[in-house]
Length: 227
Image (cartoon, rainbow, N blue to C red; front, top):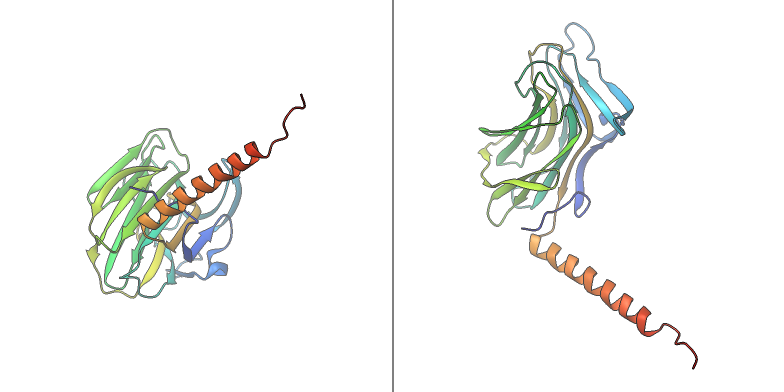
């Protein structure tokens, strides 16, 4: 299978770096009954810029309406780290509602800071402490299933969505009513419509062929040594 990396398609909604998501088209939903949620940008966090959410017991999420994507091929890419909390539950999430179904990822960390990610009933623990990792869901409208990737390696395939008639949207943030000690630093949350994997293969093949032709022409046009 050809992996559709971030940037090969048309971006539908995206948060990047330490930008305030509300300046990128996202709407913040939170329970303001007691106080404003502590969110903000952070620079050079282990070499990444990120937007911080957490330390908020009533849940908050960012949402962006994306239009119906039931018949589209798409890729969700998330780069995030969850700080050590001493708890296992994956209380942070990123969901794609296509207009007819939903895919979702959950993020957390254990007492050692090792990152946890779940999709459906399947859970992965990434050894190495509290570090940034990239997670991708790549959906094919032909098979109506998705594949799941961690740092460029495919971990699951043939994933079916949950039926959902909610308005089409990209949502990310934290689940409500959790202990106020959790924190997630979001470097990237991006949803893009992607070309067919076969088309990407042709693009890659064509690029390789052009490089070959260019190098061959350079070789053939190189000056020859005089006798």
